[in-house]
Image (cartoon, rainbow, N blue to C red):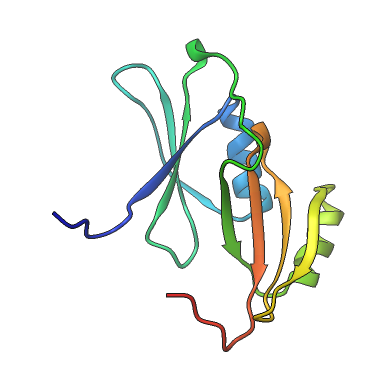
Length: 132
């Protein structure tokens, strides 16, 4: 058996509307579908520009609030210009929680927090850096 493709990653969230507002308003992702599962979970699928993989947000209020363990999981997105990204985030009142940091390959990155404490890494890569 061999998988063909990564389709989506699910993240459980406490407040669906607040989380959707963050990912669409701050990061520019697009909600492509919202529905309720047969067991009652509220689901939203988000499209990431230039990516086939989706992010699935899941809210299931009977299970209580989400508690994300520190440094357990994060999403990483590539941005065009990190300095412009930092300026935009600052103007929106979004706190940079770490960075900017420069790697030996010349990439630069920062971290911000999404609702529920999920970390989001924003990376600027030099044109000649390819990750396969």
